[in-house]
Amino acid sequence: MISHISKQKMLYLMLLPGVIYLIIFSYAPMYGIVLAFKDFSIIKGIMNSPWVGMKHFEKLFADSYFQTVTWNTLKISLLRLLFGFPVPIILALMLNEVRKTAFKRTIQTVIYLPHFISWVIIAGILKVFLTTESGIVNQVIQLFGFEPIPFLTSNTYFVPMLIVSDILKEAGWGTIIYLAALAGVDPEQYEAAMIDGANRWKRLIYITLPGISVAISIMLILSLSGILNAGFDQIFNLYSPLVYESADIIDTYVFRIGLLSGKYSLATALGLFKSLIALILILITNKIAKALGGSGIW
Image (cartoon, rainbow, N blue to C red; front, side, top):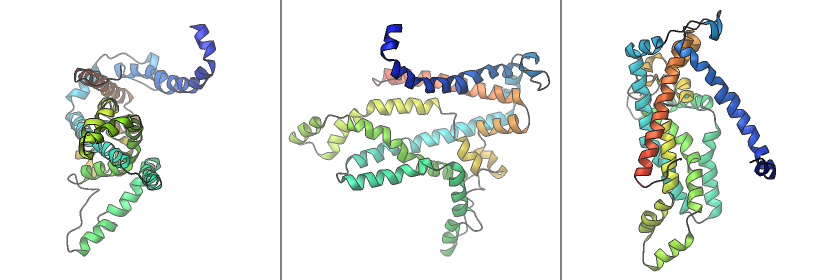
């Protein structure tokens, strides 16, 4: 082992910053999980605060609003997965068919750019376009004689607006993995299929999609593992008390009860519950992917 490390010392040296980052920001904070089982007091500190067992979990499960935010989280995440997951695959397949390199790179650059813009900026842009009183979209709607649509203040329209804006921001970036997978498909398979008379649609079905099936299955597993991450940054910058009923999720609820209300133990219990569900989901999804003949993460 030591000899192997000495031979590959430069590679391990490159790995070191990532390991340090994980230790500091992922493993060290796990010490705070004990707050979920304590009645935390800032004066007494973590170690001296009294143990209360499952008190905070019982309080959460008995709270009807906890059920509301859990349902909202699942609903928004599932809608993101249903409508957003296929979009990068479709975009990658379309870009793969483009033969003019300059045009292809231009399109890639354009669809990648929104990923690098923070939700703070995008939320500001959306508010300029979608506000009921002065939004550009509603001004156009009113020009055609219709009533303005309260995209940002209506429980009916807020969630669809979240899904569409998330797709527009992240779909282009998601194509990178699938384009890389497409680059690994053997061109000779396409040539053989063309000789056998397969049209473009059949080549897509029988060569292209099977060629990227591993990448699709892995991305699906990772997406399902984060099913309870409904997009804190996006929702926090766009929502208001008017849409709490449909848009308040676990992360925003944790923020309010933890940082704003000072109920650190209750917020920690909620965060631990979320992490446990995510772990169960990734284990189940990985097993299902393997059972269906796909490739799991491990």
